[in-house]
Length: 181
Image (cartoon, rainbow, N blue to C red; front, side, top):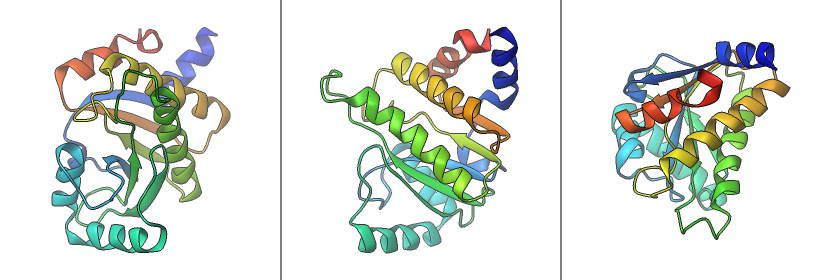
């Protein structure tokens, strides 16, 4: 098991950065279901990426009516260094009684599958649902690392996954996961 963990941790990295400045194939946006931008990381990605991202999101919305919780859609990166933005809608925390952990797992799984489908080799995840959606940060970090680890253990296409933490609390929670110790 230790060898498998070492191989996984070589493909996963925790960083404290501004996700809009990363030169990776895709960044994952913690979007809202309207796909029209918002606050936090969603607003920052839309501002930095420019109107091309919003225009594509509007096309997706017109085609399918937004993006349901746990699902993901992909757009070009616009003015971002990343080629793509994968928009996923995380769950709003309601005490864990509305299937929130499973919905968050789906965010990671669906984002990674969409990445593979589009030839993405490097991908960076924001801390999905831990801001205004109030998902407990410790549980969100565990779910993120577990789901990404499970996916990578079954799929060798993606070479590197970055967990991009904006705040010190998330950064410490990710680094303290047993996979990284």
